[in-house]
Image (spheres, rainbow, N blue to C red):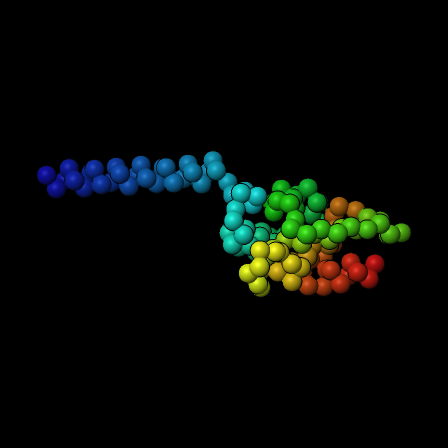
Length: 124
């Protein structure tokens, strides 16, 4: 009798593990579908994975669309700064630059991110 119960519990746990693995495998995180709190945490994790030289397309595939974006053309090429929300400052329903991490791209290639990236962009 006890052996039957243990076997059934084991089968149930195994089936549950297969179900969880399938969900995680076939339904990846999509930043566009998350609420702001989840997206903020997701962005923090993904920004930590960034490397200099990544393309704009790679960044957009990883993080989704930016919350705020600016661009300008100079003699040095096209520059774009994209802001992704990574910290909560004020509950007002509006995402502001101080709640975001800036990513600076030159000719669609990541050249800087963090607090100094926007200042670098402004001095171009």
